[in-house]
Image 1 (cartoon, rainbow, N blue to C red):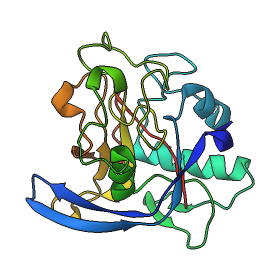
Image 2: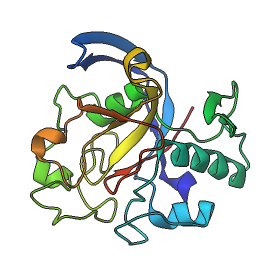
Image 3: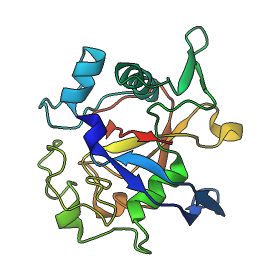
Amino acid sequence: MIKDWMTSIPKGEICLRDDRKKTTWNATIEPFLMSKYLITQEIYSEVMLTNPSISRGIQKPVENVSWFDAIKFCNALSESSGLNKYYHVNVENESVEIIQGANGYRLPTDAEWEYSCRALSESVQYGVIEDIAWYERNANGTTHEVGLKQSNEFGLFDMLGNVWEWCWDLYDPDVYGSYRIFRGGGWSDDSRGCLASNRRRSHPTYAIDDLGFRVARS
């Protein structure tokens, strides 16, 4: 199933901004594959043989997963798909390194995520918020099945709202150490929280009921 979910994202460039640090920078995006949908509880359970989610439903996004959980899922999905693991995980100190040349599943980078979310649009919301996202005003306090709202121009669903999404990148190691970035807003956020430009961070062991992920491949 996951193979059928992957869609091609074209090469491009994006200017990113961090409002806290008051910095901007440009990133070149090489062509890659991104999953159209958030990883569901059904797929996560099939691969990991467990479901940590608080709001249960097989087609709802898996949530209450840490960054480390997402990394381990990527490796397990790669192995079950006959691909090379993308990450080397050191269990003793919980460090993670990219395996050069690997063709397996991985988390999108911060730049890839925003580029994919905007889908070549200059807008921070790729459509009318009611039509594209489950958020505070329409979610009724819970997650919803993936793919029910309108996709963006790249054919990606739930890039805004439903659950936040872990990315690969460290946020600011000089200040926050090992904290990783997550993006997109969730069901408990207002419209201003569901923007392509919003960036949050937390410890890689952090897990909560409005935080999940989707996968990418180089």
